[in-house]
Image (spheres, rainbow, N blue to C red):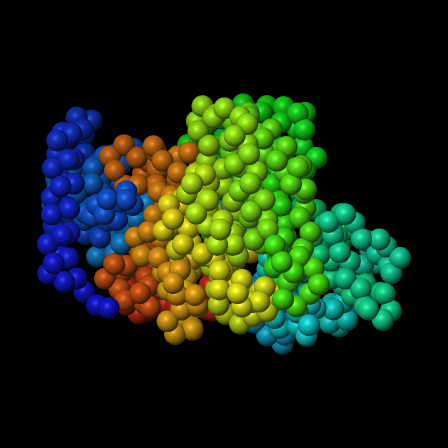
Length: 598
């Protein structure tokens, strides 16, 4: 560990910087005039896989004009050039979140936030306070509770009845796969002891009385969701605007939306037309085992309507093959360690093969949610069979498995061999007891030792793309960076890291959030690296990440976000060195910070 660069490192940076300067100088100065914006005095990490390092970046319009030394870039300044001083901090391509639910994340900002409530009293206090602060809302909505604080791993309606006695209450688990409601919500949905479980869903019942306990798993959530007042179009537009502001606060300039439909696409398009869509969005369309040629025709029409565009596009189809480990619904090769089930796949292998082959044949990228080792194997099998049956699409195959929580060793090298992208969310592996204990008990020690094996996948030639799954966890990419590098909680537990053999070098992690994510959305020719001609999306951090000891990575905070060549976020000044402060255990912040006017 070190607090500053060694002389060898200084020399290496100087050589790399000189190389960048020579390359940039060979291109000649742009006759159009000086740069519109320059970033100076930084530790520029180009994320190009070659270790290119520099000090400064010049921007003209919405593209990068030059990368080089501070002296070289200063020569491109004119009287109207905006100057941003990085003050020695890291300058990166804008973070690209490879898997999230963007509108849902924006909507969650207006619900009871339980993500950083790690004990039952904290959960109860959050819900009670939110209900009291919003007495006029017909339903009390919240999300983010963890399984561990509850006896037996699941809450009950009696707890929620006490906290919210006057109206229906609806609390989504942090993973989005389990719903907790009170008695008034069950009554509103007409759920009684006689209500049958829907296909691929479970109404959890009291083993003695058969009465619903207030917990609904997977597809059973829809029984209540169908009667919850739905947000209006204006509500959803407001949520999307709020999501954009939240992205800027964390240096996120591109997102890959893991589900969508024609109605949601219209929201993105409306903000694009208004000039308000200040993140780049690649959105999937969600479907299931029932998809057929008519489904594909409808999706093809939407792809034609929203083709390849720097701001908003589609081209991906999202499928689910299983649920989550915490609820025993992830599909496993062997029974769970503490339940007589392996989890039931949401599709048969035959149905999955058929749907994957259908969309592969038409050139779509297929994203498959697969968490358990059986689900992961089914996804890889389906991709392999589609490749053997169909000619390669014109743009090539870049199919993806999403999440990948516990993997059989035989399937790890298949990612590289098949060219399948491992789309993972590092902060899901946060070894905080409130998050990890239930997961580890359910799968047992052998499978837990194969949890989130991004190191092994990368070592065997697999491509990585990292995201958050927001609002499942915080949108802040730094939380995932810390987890992928250190395999610890934000405050450093356990010492040495959980499953430490899966740690990745910092550069490889940053690439998974930038150039690797750009590859996963077919965007590597226009973003994800800092080079002349690339889109001018950048994030500046308060510290040089490569000079910090790994355990101190979270000391670095986002100070500036640049999108499309313009500053869209500047961190307000606050006490302490460069305004740095640590987030709480779950990655949330005690209060909101205003963004800069746009």
